[in-house]
Amino acid sequence: MLTALPNALRLLLAALLWTKDPDSHLDLSPAYAPLRFQLRHEHAAAQGSRSLFADVPPSLLGQYHEIPIENIKTHRIPSAAYSHARFLSMRDAQTPILAWDSVEILGPDVSKRRTLLELATMTHNSYYAEPSHKNWYPINGWNTSVPFGWEPDADGLRGHIFASEDNSTVVISIKGTSAPWIAGGEGPTKARDKLNDNLLFSCCCARLGITWSTVCGCYSGGDKCDQNCLEDSLTGDSLYYEIATNLYNDVVYMYPNANIWLTGHSLGGAIASLVGVTFGAPVVAFEVPGEKLAASAFASAPSTQHITHVYHTADPMAMGTCNGITSLCYVAGFAVETRCHLGQRILYDTVTHRGWSVESRHHSMKFLLDNLFNEDWDAEAGVEVPAVDVEEDCVECYNWEFGDFK
Ligand SMILES: *[C@@H]1O[C@H](CO)[C@@H](O)[C@H](O)[C@H]1NC(C)=O
Ligand SMILES: *[C@@H]1O[C@H](CO)[C@@H](O)[C@H](O)[C@H]1NC(C)=O
Image 1 (cartoon, protein in one colour):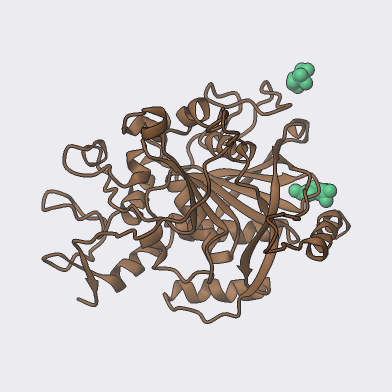
Image 2 (cartoon, protein in one colour):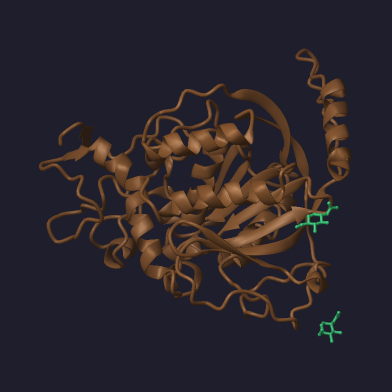
Protein backbone atom coordinates (compact mmCIF):
# COMPACT_ATOMS: atom_id res chain seq x y z
CA MET A 1 0.00 0.00 0.00
CA LEU A 2 2.70 2.45 1.04
CA THR A 3 4.51 2.10 -2.24
CA ALA A 4 1.44 3.26 -4.13
CA LEU A 5 1.20 6.36 -1.96
CA PRO A 6 3.31 8.85 -3.91
CA ASN A 7 1.14 8.54 -6.99
CA ALA A 8 -2.07 8.40 -4.98
CA LEU A 9 -1.00 11.60 -3.29
CA ARG A 10 -0.12 13.21 -6.56
CA LEU A 11 -3.51 12.25 -7.92
CA LEU A 12 -5.22 13.75 -4.88
CA LEU A 13 -3.21 16.93 -5.26
CA ALA A 14 -4.05 16.97 -8.92
CA ALA A 15 -7.75 16.74 -8.13
CA LEU A 16 -7.40 19.73 -5.81
CA LEU A 17 -5.21 21.81 -8.08
CA TRP A 18 -6.44 20.93 -11.51
CA THR A 19 -8.63 23.79 -12.57
CA LYS A 20 -9.11 24.80 -16.14
CA ASP A 21 -10.45 28.27 -16.60
CA PRO A 22 -12.60 28.11 -19.74
CA ASP A 23 -12.08 31.82 -20.45
CA SER A 24 -8.35 31.88 -20.35
CA HIS A 25 -6.55 29.28 -22.40
CA LEU A 26 -4.30 28.62 -19.51
CA ASP A 27 -3.88 24.95 -18.75
CA LEU A 28 -3.12 24.61 -15.07
CA SER A 29 -2.91 20.83 -15.10
CA PRO A 30 0.01 19.72 -12.95
CA ALA A 31 3.21 18.53 -14.57
CA TYR A 32 4.10 15.03 -13.47
CA ALA A 33 7.51 13.48 -13.54
CA PRO A 34 7.66 10.74 -16.19
CA LEU A 35 7.22 7.17 -14.95
CA ARG A 36 10.12 4.77 -15.29
CA PHE A 37 9.09 1.27 -16.34
CA GLN A 38 11.09 -1.92 -15.99
CA LEU A 39 10.48 -5.08 -17.96
CA ARG A 40 9.39 -7.52 -15.21
CA HIS A 41 7.78 -10.54 -16.92
CA GLU A 42 7.12 -12.16 -20.24
CA HIS A 43 3.69 -13.64 -20.84
CA ALA A 44 2.68 -16.38 -23.26
CA ALA A 45 -0.51 -18.32 -23.78
CA ALA A 46 -0.40 -21.82 -22.38
CA GLN A 47 -2.92 -24.56 -23.13
CA GLY A 48 -6.48 -23.29 -23.36
CA SER A 49 -6.97 -19.66 -22.47
CA ARG A 50 -4.50 -19.33 -19.58
CA SER A 51 -1.23 -17.42 -19.68
CA LEU A 52 2.18 -18.41 -18.35
CA PHE A 53 4.65 -15.90 -16.94
CA ALA A 54 8.43 -15.82 -16.93
CA ASP A 55 10.07 -13.40 -14.51
CA VAL A 56 12.93 -11.25 -15.66
CA PRO A 57 15.97 -12.07 -13.52
CA PRO A 58 16.73 -9.35 -10.94
CA SER A 59 20.15 -8.82 -12.50
CA LEU A 60 18.39 -7.41 -15.58
CA LEU A 61 16.15 -4.94 -13.77
CA GLY A 62 18.44 -1.98 -14.39
CA GLN A 63 16.84 -1.15 -17.72
CA TYR A 64 13.88 1.19 -18.00
CA HIS A 65 11.51 3.01 -20.32
CA GLU A 66 10.72 6.56 -19.19
CA ILE A 67 7.21 7.64 -20.19
CA PRO A 68 5.59 11.09 -19.77
CA ILE A 69 2.18 10.92 -18.07
CA GLU A 70 -0.93 13.03 -17.67
CA ASN A 71 -4.41 12.79 -16.21
CA ILE A 72 -6.88 11.00 -18.40
CA LYS A 73 -10.57 10.27 -17.97
CA THR A 74 -12.02 6.81 -18.19
CA HIS A 75 -14.65 4.56 -16.63
CA ARG A 76 -14.04 1.78 -14.17
CA ILE A 77 -15.98 -1.08 -12.73
CA PRO A 78 -15.94 -0.61 -8.95
CA SER A 79 -14.24 -3.80 -7.77
CA ALA A 80 -12.37 -6.87 -8.85
CA ALA A 81 -15.35 -9.00 -7.93
CA TYR A 82 -17.43 -6.94 -10.26
CA SER A 83 -14.98 -7.41 -13.07
CA HIS A 84 -15.18 -11.15 -12.55
CA ALA A 85 -18.96 -11.02 -12.85
CA ARG A 86 -18.53 -9.02 -15.98
CA PHE A 87 -16.21 -11.61 -17.42
CA LEU A 88 -18.74 -14.37 -16.80
CA SER A 89 -21.57 -12.53 -18.44
CA MET A 90 -19.39 -11.78 -21.43
CA ARG A 91 -18.88 -15.48 -21.98
CA ASP A 92 -22.59 -15.90 -22.33
CA ALA A 93 -22.61 -13.07 -24.84
CA GLN A 94 -25.03 -11.12 -22.65
CA THR A 95 -24.68 -7.42 -22.22
CA PRO A 96 -24.13 -6.93 -18.53
CA ILE A 97 -25.64 -3.88 -16.94
CA LEU A 98 -22.94 -2.44 -14.76
CA ALA A 99 -22.51 0.66 -12.69
CA TRP A 100 -19.46 2.30 -14.20
CA ASP A 101 -17.62 4.93 -12.19
CA SER A 102 -16.22 7.90 -14.04
CA VAL A 103 -12.60 8.26 -12.90
CA GLU A 104 -9.48 10.25 -13.63
CA ILE A 105 -6.24 8.31 -13.65
CA LEU A 106 -2.63 8.77 -14.68
CA GLY A 107 -2.19 7.64 -18.26
CA PRO A 108 0.38 7.98 -21.01
CA ASP A 109 0.78 11.54 -22.32
CA VAL A 110 0.27 10.85 -26.03
CA SER A 111 1.07 14.42 -27.03
CA LYS A 112 4.74 13.65 -26.34
CA ARG A 113 6.88 11.88 -28.91
CA ARG A 114 8.82 10.22 -26.11
CA THR A 115 5.65 8.44 -24.99
CA LEU A 116 4.98 7.03 -28.44
CA LEU A 117 8.63 6.11 -28.99
CA GLU A 118 8.91 4.22 -25.69
CA LEU A 119 5.59 2.40 -26.07
CA ALA A 120 6.42 1.60 -29.70
CA THR A 121 9.75 0.13 -28.58
CA MET A 122 8.05 -1.95 -25.88
CA THR A 123 5.56 -3.18 -28.45
CA HIS A 124 8.21 -3.93 -31.03
CA ASN A 125 10.35 -5.90 -28.61
CA SER A 126 7.43 -8.07 -27.58
CA TYR A 127 7.78 -9.86 -30.92
CA TYR A 128 11.10 -11.15 -29.66
CA ALA A 129 11.55 -13.31 -26.58
CA GLU A 130 15.27 -12.72 -26.35
CA PRO A 131 16.99 -9.38 -25.75
CA SER A 132 19.96 -10.86 -27.60
CA HIS A 133 17.84 -11.13 -30.77
CA LYS A 134 19.31 -9.00 -33.55
CA ASN A 135 16.06 -7.05 -33.93
CA TRP A 136 15.77 -6.17 -30.25
CA TYR A 137 15.91 -2.42 -29.69
CA PRO A 138 18.31 -1.36 -26.97
CA ILE A 139 16.75 -0.26 -23.70
CA ASN A 140 18.68 1.92 -21.24
CA GLY A 141 20.83 -0.25 -19.01
CA TRP A 142 19.90 -3.63 -20.47
CA ASN A 143 22.67 -6.23 -20.31
CA THR A 144 22.09 -8.32 -23.42
CA SER A 145 24.65 -10.95 -22.53
CA VAL A 146 22.35 -12.46 -19.88
CA PRO A 147 19.98 -14.96 -21.49
CA PHE A 148 16.33 -14.84 -20.56
CA GLY A 149 12.96 -15.54 -22.18
CA TRP A 150 10.78 -18.16 -23.81
CA GLU A 151 11.90 -20.89 -26.06
CA PRO A 152 10.12 -19.94 -29.25
CA ASP A 153 7.74 -22.92 -29.22
CA ALA A 154 4.74 -21.49 -27.39
CA ASP A 155 1.70 -21.03 -29.60
CA GLY A 156 -0.52 -17.97 -29.35
CA LEU A 157 -0.75 -14.61 -27.64
CA ARG A 158 2.57 -13.37 -26.26
CA GLY A 159 4.21 -10.26 -24.93
CA HIS A 160 5.81 -8.41 -22.05
CA ILE A 161 4.78 -6.90 -18.73
CA PHE A 162 6.43 -3.75 -17.39
CA ALA A 163 5.98 -2.07 -14.02
CA SER A 164 6.92 1.37 -12.77
CA GLU A 165 9.53 1.43 -10.01
CA ASP A 166 6.87 1.83 -7.31
CA ASN A 167 4.52 -0.73 -8.91
CA SER A 168 1.85 1.95 -9.23
CA THR A 169 1.50 1.51 -13.00
CA VAL A 170 1.85 -1.62 -15.12
CA VAL A 171 2.04 -1.85 -18.91
CA ILE A 172 1.01 -5.01 -20.76
CA SER A 173 2.39 -5.21 -24.29
CA ILE A 174 0.99 -7.71 -26.76
CA LYS A 175 2.77 -8.89 -29.86
CA GLY A 176 1.09 -8.68 -33.25
CA THR A 177 0.90 -11.09 -36.15
CA SER A 178 4.00 -13.11 -36.89
CA ALA A 179 4.39 -13.06 -40.65
CA PRO A 180 7.59 -12.30 -42.52
CA TRP A 181 6.10 -9.37 -44.41
CA ILE A 182 4.66 -7.76 -41.28
CA ALA A 183 7.27 -7.81 -38.56
CA GLY A 184 10.20 -9.65 -40.01
CA GLY A 185 9.45 -12.74 -37.95
CA GLU A 186 7.95 -16.04 -38.95
CA GLY A 187 7.08 -17.85 -35.79
CA PRO A 188 5.11 -20.69 -34.31
CA THR A 189 2.24 -18.30 -33.56
CA LYS A 190 1.64 -17.73 -37.26
CA ALA A 191 -1.35 -20.00 -37.85
CA ARG A 192 -3.24 -18.94 -34.75
CA ASP A 193 -2.41 -15.29 -35.42
CA LYS A 194 -3.92 -15.62 -38.87
CA LEU A 195 -7.13 -17.17 -37.55
CA ASN A 196 -7.49 -14.28 -35.10
CA ASP A 197 -6.72 -11.71 -37.79
CA ASN A 198 -9.32 -13.21 -40.08
CA LEU A 199 -11.93 -13.30 -37.32
CA LEU A 200 -11.31 -9.76 -36.12
CA PHE A 201 -10.64 -7.81 -39.29
CA SER A 202 -12.94 -9.36 -41.87
CA CYS A 203 -16.58 -8.44 -42.34
CA CYS A 204 -17.97 -11.95 -42.13
CA CYS A 205 -15.55 -14.73 -41.12
CA ALA A 206 -13.17 -14.01 -44.00
CA ARG A 207 -15.79 -14.95 -46.57
CA LEU A 208 -14.18 -13.23 -49.55
CA GLY A 209 -15.75 -15.33 -52.27
CA ILE A 210 -16.33 -18.95 -53.10
CA THR A 211 -12.63 -19.77 -53.36
CA TRP A 212 -11.90 -18.75 -49.76
CA SER A 213 -12.47 -21.07 -46.84
CA THR A 214 -14.24 -19.08 -44.15
CA VAL A 215 -13.04 -19.16 -40.53
CA CYS A 216 -16.54 -19.47 -39.04
CA GLY A 217 -19.96 -20.35 -40.39
CA CYS A 218 -21.81 -17.05 -40.17
CA TYR A 219 -22.17 -16.41 -43.87
CA SER A 220 -25.89 -16.65 -44.57
CA GLY A 221 -26.03 -16.46 -48.34
CA GLY A 222 -26.11 -13.46 -50.64
CA ASP A 223 -24.55 -10.54 -48.81
CA LYS A 224 -25.95 -11.56 -45.43
CA CYS A 225 -23.98 -12.27 -42.29
CA ASP A 226 -25.48 -13.56 -39.04
CA GLN A 227 -24.68 -11.13 -36.23
CA ASN A 228 -25.27 -13.54 -33.32
CA CYS A 229 -23.06 -16.12 -34.94
CA LEU A 230 -20.37 -13.51 -35.46
CA GLU A 231 -20.45 -12.46 -31.82
CA ASP A 232 -20.22 -16.08 -30.68
CA SER A 233 -17.29 -16.72 -32.99
CA LEU A 234 -15.34 -13.81 -31.46
CA THR A 235 -15.83 -14.83 -27.87
CA GLY A 236 -14.66 -18.41 -28.30
CA ASP A 237 -12.34 -20.09 -25.81
CA SER A 238 -8.68 -19.88 -26.70
CA LEU A 239 -9.23 -16.92 -29.00
CA TYR A 240 -6.86 -14.07 -28.26
CA TYR A 241 -9.50 -11.80 -26.75
CA GLU A 242 -10.37 -14.48 -24.21
CA ILE A 243 -6.73 -15.19 -23.40
CA ALA A 244 -5.99 -11.48 -23.04
CA THR A 245 -8.95 -10.96 -20.71
CA ASN A 246 -7.57 -13.70 -18.47
CA LEU A 247 -4.12 -12.16 -18.75
CA TYR A 248 -5.49 -8.81 -17.62
CA ASN A 249 -7.14 -10.42 -14.62
CA ASP A 250 -3.89 -12.22 -13.75
CA VAL A 251 -1.97 -8.95 -13.86
CA VAL A 252 -4.58 -7.34 -11.59
CA TYR A 253 -3.96 -10.24 -9.20
CA MET A 254 -0.16 -9.77 -9.40
CA TYR A 255 -0.34 -5.97 -8.98
CA PRO A 256 -3.60 -5.38 -7.09
CA ASN A 257 -3.03 -1.65 -6.56
CA ALA A 258 -1.72 -0.83 -9.99
CA ASN A 259 -3.17 1.22 -12.74
CA ILE A 260 -2.83 -0.97 -15.84
CA TRP A 261 -2.18 0.24 -19.39
CA LEU A 262 -2.05 -1.81 -22.58
CA THR A 263 -0.12 -1.43 -25.78
CA GLY A 264 0.38 -3.46 -28.93
CA HIS A 265 1.00 -3.41 -32.64
CA SER A 266 -1.42 -4.57 -35.35
CA LEU A 267 -3.32 -7.66 -34.09
CA GLY A 268 -1.69 -7.08 -30.67
CA GLY A 269 -2.93 -3.49 -30.68
CA ALA A 270 -6.44 -4.61 -31.55
CA ILE A 271 -6.45 -7.06 -28.65
CA ALA A 272 -5.03 -4.33 -26.36
CA SER A 273 -7.84 -2.02 -27.44
CA LEU A 274 -10.58 -4.63 -26.96
CA VAL A 275 -9.32 -5.46 -23.47
CA GLY A 276 -8.84 -1.76 -22.69
CA VAL A 277 -12.41 -0.94 -23.63
CA THR A 278 -13.67 -3.87 -21.56
CA PHE A 279 -11.90 -2.71 -18.40
CA GLY A 280 -11.57 1.06 -18.96
CA ALA A 281 -7.76 0.75 -19.07
CA PRO A 282 -5.62 3.26 -21.05
CA VAL A 283 -4.42 1.92 -24.41
CA VAL A 284 -1.94 3.11 -27.02
CA ALA A 285 -2.31 0.90 -30.09
CA PHE A 286 -0.11 1.07 -33.18
CA GLU A 287 -1.12 0.41 -36.78
CA VAL A 288 -4.28 -1.55 -36.04
CA PRO A 289 -6.64 -2.61 -38.83
CA GLY A 290 -10.13 -1.47 -37.73
CA GLU A 291 -11.19 -3.24 -34.52
CA LYS A 292 -14.42 -1.33 -33.99
CA LEU A 293 -16.54 -3.98 -35.69
CA ALA A 294 -15.15 -6.73 -33.46
CA ALA A 295 -15.68 -4.51 -30.41
CA SER A 296 -19.41 -4.58 -31.06
CA ALA A 297 -19.36 -8.24 -29.97
CA PHE A 298 -18.29 -7.28 -26.45
CA ALA A 299 -19.83 -5.01 -23.87
CA SER A 300 -17.67 -1.98 -23.29
CA ALA A 301 -17.01 1.06 -21.11
CA PRO A 302 -19.35 4.00 -21.77
CA SER A 303 -16.47 6.15 -23.04
CA THR A 304 -13.50 5.33 -25.26
CA GLN A 305 -11.25 8.40 -25.17
CA HIS A 306 -8.78 6.42 -23.06
CA ILE A 307 -7.95 4.46 -26.20
CA THR A 308 -5.51 6.10 -28.62
CA HIS A 309 -4.76 4.66 -32.03
CA VAL A 310 -1.48 5.71 -33.61
CA TYR A 311 -1.13 5.00 -37.33
CA HIS A 312 -0.14 6.58 -40.61
CA THR A 313 -1.60 6.99 -44.06
CA ALA A 314 1.03 4.89 -45.90
CA ASP A 315 0.08 1.72 -43.97
CA PRO A 316 -2.54 -0.16 -46.03
CA MET A 317 -3.49 -2.45 -43.12
CA ALA A 318 -4.29 0.31 -40.65
CA MET A 319 -6.00 2.35 -43.37
CA GLY A 320 -8.17 -0.63 -44.36
CA THR A 321 -7.00 -0.67 -47.97
CA CYS A 322 -5.07 -3.95 -47.98
CA ASN A 323 -7.83 -5.87 -49.73
CA GLY A 324 -8.90 -6.86 -53.19
CA ILE A 325 -7.55 -9.83 -55.07
CA THR A 326 -4.25 -8.22 -56.02
CA SER A 327 -3.39 -7.05 -52.49
CA LEU A 328 -0.62 -8.69 -50.52
CA CYS A 329 -3.09 -9.37 -47.68
CA TYR A 330 -5.41 -11.29 -49.97
CA VAL A 331 -2.59 -13.24 -51.58
CA ALA A 332 -1.15 -14.15 -48.17
CA GLY A 333 -4.55 -15.33 -46.93
CA PHE A 334 -5.44 -12.39 -44.72
CA ALA A 335 -8.92 -10.91 -45.03
CA VAL A 336 -8.22 -7.39 -43.77
CA GLU A 337 -11.43 -5.56 -44.62
CA THR A 338 -12.20 -3.36 -41.61
CA ARG A 339 -11.10 0.25 -41.31
CA CYS A 340 -12.89 1.88 -38.34
CA HIS A 341 -11.16 2.35 -34.98
CA LEU A 342 -12.40 2.83 -31.43
CA GLY A 343 -11.57 5.91 -29.38
CA GLN A 344 -9.28 8.73 -30.47
CA ARG A 345 -6.44 8.68 -32.97
CA ILE A 346 -3.14 10.22 -33.88
CA LEU A 347 -2.93 9.95 -37.65
CA TYR A 348 0.42 10.74 -39.27
CA ASP A 349 -0.20 11.79 -42.85
CA THR A 350 3.05 10.33 -44.14
CA VAL A 351 1.74 10.13 -47.71
CA THR A 352 1.22 13.89 -47.96
CA HIS A 353 3.97 15.17 -45.69
CA ARG A 354 6.70 12.58 -46.18
CA GLY A 355 5.86 11.38 -49.68
CA TRP A 356 5.69 7.74 -48.54
CA SER A 357 4.04 5.22 -50.85
CA VAL A 358 1.27 3.00 -49.51
CA GLU A 359 2.81 -0.45 -49.04
CA SER A 360 2.74 -3.22 -46.50
CA ARG A 361 6.35 -2.83 -45.36
CA HIS A 362 5.28 0.52 -43.90
CA HIS A 363 3.17 -1.46 -41.43
CA SER A 364 6.26 -2.77 -39.66
CA MET A 365 7.12 -1.43 -36.23
CA LYS A 366 10.83 -1.52 -36.96
CA PHE A 367 10.32 0.70 -39.98
CA LEU A 368 8.38 3.19 -37.86
CA LEU A 369 10.93 3.20 -35.04
CA ASP A 370 13.64 4.00 -37.59
CA ASN A 371 11.68 6.50 -39.68
CA LEU A 372 8.75 8.01 -37.79
CA PHE A 373 9.04 7.99 -33.99
CA ASN A 374 12.78 8.73 -34.12
CA GLU A 375 12.18 12.42 -34.78
CA ASP A 376 9.55 15.07 -34.18
CA TRP A 377 6.74 15.14 -36.71
CA ASP A 378 7.30 18.81 -37.61
CA ALA A 379 10.40 19.99 -35.80
CA GLU A 380 10.34 23.42 -37.47
CA ALA A 381 6.85 24.14 -36.19
CA GLY A 382 7.68 22.60 -32.81
CA VAL A 383 5.13 19.80 -33.31
CA GLU A 384 6.29 16.56 -31.66
CA VAL A 385 3.25 14.50 -32.60
CA PRO A 386 0.24 15.22 -34.87
CA ALA A 387 -2.85 16.46 -33.01
CA VAL A 388 -5.26 13.96 -31.53
CA ASP A 389 -8.60 13.72 -33.32
CA VAL A 390 -11.50 11.35 -33.77
CA GLU A 391 -12.35 9.37 -36.90
CA GLU A 392 -15.56 10.72 -38.36
CA ASP A 393 -18.18 9.11 -40.56
CA CYS A 394 -16.28 5.84 -40.76
CA VAL A 395 -18.37 3.24 -42.57
CA GLU A 396 -17.59 -0.44 -42.23
CA CYS A 397 -18.43 -3.36 -44.50
CA TYR A 398 -21.15 -1.35 -46.25
CA ASN A 399 -21.83 -4.14 -48.76
CA TRP A 400 -22.81 -6.56 -46.00
CA GLU A 401 -26.13 -6.90 -44.25
CA PHE A 402 -25.87 -7.96 -40.60
CA GLY A 403 -28.85 -9.48 -38.79
CA ASP A 404 -30.54 -12.52 -37.36
CA PHE A 405 -30.47 -14.98 -40.26
CA LYS A 406 -29.95 -18.33 -38.58
C1 LIG B 1 26.52 -8.44 -18.14
O1 LIG B 1 26.34 -9.75 -17.59
C2 LIG B 1 27.52 -10.54 -17.67
C3 LIG B 1 27.16 -11.95 -17.19
O2 LIG B 1 26.52 -11.92 -15.95
C4 LIG B 1 28.62 -9.89 -16.80
O3 LIG B 1 29.80 -10.66 -16.86
C5 LIG B 1 28.89 -8.47 -17.33
O4 LIG B 1 29.81 -7.82 -16.48
C6 LIG B 1 27.59 -7.67 -17.39
N1 LIG B 1 27.85 -6.40 -18.05
C7 LIG B 1 27.45 -5.25 -17.54
C8 LIG B 1 27.78 -4.04 -18.35
O5 LIG B 1 26.84 -5.17 -16.48
C1 LIG C 1 6.84 -4.59 -6.92
O1 LIG C 1 6.33 -5.86 -7.27
C2 LIG C 1 7.30 -6.88 -7.28
C3 LIG C 1 6.62 -8.13 -7.80
O2 LIG C 1 6.65 -8.15 -9.19
C4 LIG C 1 7.88 -7.05 -5.90
O3 LIG C 1 8.87 -8.05 -5.91
C5 LIG C 1 8.48 -5.74 -5.44
O4 LIG C 1 8.93 -5.85 -4.10
C6 LIG C 1 7.48 -4.62 -5.54
N1 LIG C 1 8.16 -3.36 -5.31
C7 LIG C 1 7.63 -2.40 -4.59
C8 LIG C 1 8.44 -1.15 -4.47
O5 LIG C 1 6.54 -2.54 -4.03
